[in-house]
Image (cartoon, rainbow, N blue to C red; front, side, top):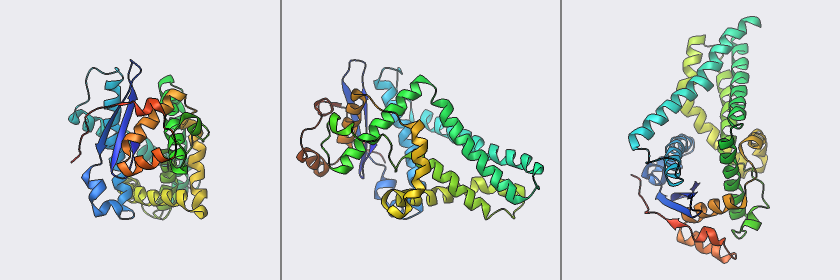
Length: 296
């Protein structure tokens, strides 16, 4: 899946070997509202949008790849997303907080130790969870496609032609990755919760849920700065290290799928620029598009 300023696209290789794509306009709320361009607010909107589009992309691609008999309905997608969010809150927010509340008694039982232990447990859980799921063969393949996505974006942003040879020269790691965002969220949360250390334990646990939009918005701004400002590059380092797990070297046929997705996400002017650079991968150009949809 690739996201451009005005649209997002999905590409999948069907069992018959043909690449199929679908292009969708971005939701109006994220692409046309003023809030989508306002610092801090845009980070929250991007987070919600990414969850929604990610579930839709997985449903569509699984159906086209022949892994599902029918597409997931809107209601099923919403239900799945709610369950996933609740699971994430329980695992990465509440569990570290309760564990820290229990363990701090073995130190000096202070609020400062609670915040320190909570932050350590959260980072360990995030990294451990990602490492654990990466052991699955199916997830390894997902991470290879993740690497194909990053390599293709690197080549596009560097002005190179979108050919396999040019793209495979790049690193599968990219500073504007969701993996980097996760680690930045964990680090920002630590410092935000550090300021709340004087509060009673119950209020601190409640704040870990209530402050999610604030932390997400602040983390998104740091992620953008880290990717675009050299003096903030250090902030993206932990995420780049974690991408050693979440990205893998892709095969050439996976890169072809990534190219097809990117081409379908671009507008006419951006496509013209791509073609002016030189040849474009033939298999990606020959991808079969499905009917374009518009999001409300």
